[in-house]
Image (cartoon, rainbow, N blue to C red; front, side, top):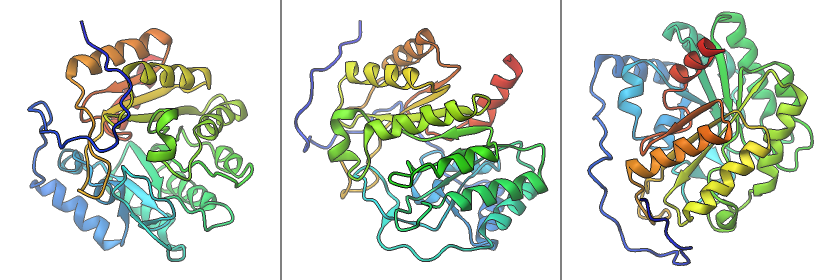
Length: 301
């Protein structure tokens, strides 16, 4: 029987030793280097690098990368995120085409496009998503496209313009439970993130919606279950659950390492309440194995 901890109020927990079930392979393959060379050639950003993703070696060795548009500087300062914060530069007008060229070169069957938050832009960066989708459709019409967007908070209905160009998957990560938002995600609003996902589905129910969360930030197990129920209530199709890993000493500490058994319990609960696709493991990240997961889903429908 898994024991569910009581609510943790301590936001300065002791430094925990990383358990033996969290292991990653060092990036050293020829395919990894080929992917790196391509990204450098077109001066692209990837969330794999900027967020210090633990799966970069595995994914890049398979020539899978999650492209990050709108620069490498975020206008928000979430306490879990390794992407730098500050005043961003302008938008690169060649970025959408260069990403499309990279997708075509890598012969990707499925691509994930994400971005930093750009609260400084009137459209929150929505049209850069739109142009990127359009170029990928033009150069690689068989490639399925997954976008992982900001919340477009206070940008009105601009998200509708993105839905109109029909990405296959519209992802916005909820990240953590409602109680922790002010501490972990200052500048974001839990209810608004949920409403974005629900409104996307309401506009076009053929677009799959997706969200992801991290565990180990001080939440309780019951709060995770409540969050999952909130996502299901807001018409989310896919969900990913992964272990939070502290990027540096300046970020929020890990409050708890969840066991593989606890991730299995969360996976089973997600299946029970009706999610169409679930990925839950210590090293799960929002775009980790997204191509394989989407292929399995299409084959099952």
